[in-house]
Length: 453
Image (cartoon, rainbow, N blue to C red):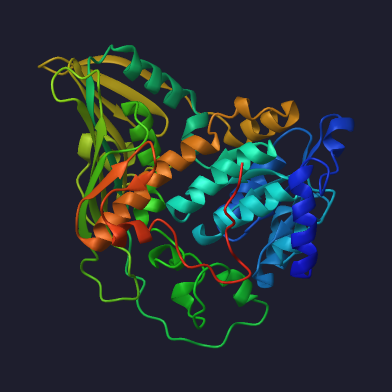
């Protein structure tokens, strides 16, 4: 698809976003929703399978810059199940011209999340975008504006927000039953081996590498700057605080009842390994939030920690760790400890992906508890059918607030100093070098647009 054609059509979509590129077939065919999955290597496969399990939902198109993935995905996820083969695209711009597609699920590397989402909205498609929804704070701000401007459903990938467990956690903490909740601690202790070093080499056949690079600086192809290991390179990823960590950051922020901080201080490093990774594998971040209703100091604290290697079972958060079980369940194993701790005047709470429990008073007596998993994909489809973004359990605004925390933490780490932030203006105060990291230099034609409301 020629870029000038895409830009012209996308501009028209801005005026009537629900008309261009959207067949609305689901409205007249037993509420059928046609979904395209963009990015099919890792989590993309989970998205495909999750949509296939929903009633009157069809995965009608797949898109990936690596055409080598298509045959295996088709055989395993469609042919073997007796399902119709989807259309295949390697260029997202061609996919967005497909009028049979009502909604997209974006499972690309982080540096493509916002641009793919905005282009999809301009093409009249509903959007579910994996976490983190943005690669920097500027992008998140534009995506929030785009969701408002085009009036479509935009779901953030914070899937724990669709769990009854998380909703009852937030209700409990904000009810006052734990007393004044002044401190939250998010934990992301996930075993990560070294990625080693890989040389620059020719682009593999079937890989559309320039499109993969997209908004990022042009660099030669290397395996450690491609599938999965892009997470550990600043050009494309945000380290583990922006990978697994963003899930727990979202829960920590939600339970603490805060949005954006006034101060951020982060320390850490890339320990043990001499390899191609340039993001930290160990990180400790502290966030300070205003708390006008606090009992004494008018602030709340959120502490977040990433570890990459040997760890303790802090807070007894991992049953798999406790039982030495390498099949401990979703986000749980015998080496990983992932979850949240909340501290209040009356006790503390431990929170995993599917349960929470309180321990009350000085003697930490077992108290109230909650549990329950939900279906994030069903919530997205329900909101589409109702044409009502208010039904989303994870609206894009909430995703942006949590992503803003990981980006501010990374800025503080990269510069080696504290960051002072104005949560109302969403600006860093008195630090031009830090402010420059709120956005990036974009490579034409893959420029995240500034959205005007």
